[in-house]
Length: 97
Image (cartoon, one colour):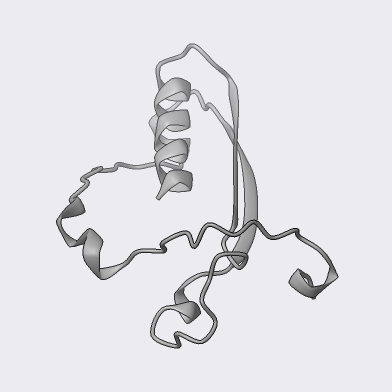
């Protein structure tokens, strides 16, 4: 959701005319905190990264973000959580493929 929020925010900056280009970068490293014995939730979390560059255009015909609606409802937070066990782990060869 952070990457999506950043994309919408960058799009607003570009459409406002204040900026010509924007870069959105996102990364998650969740595998260090996943309980791999819990098959109900471990398949939902992983590591990943992505980036993109957005460029402002002169006409709406060329626009890439056609519209958006951002809504947040945290009422189901208890159904999906990743509690931290309190043990630090170093990232090393066993965490990479």
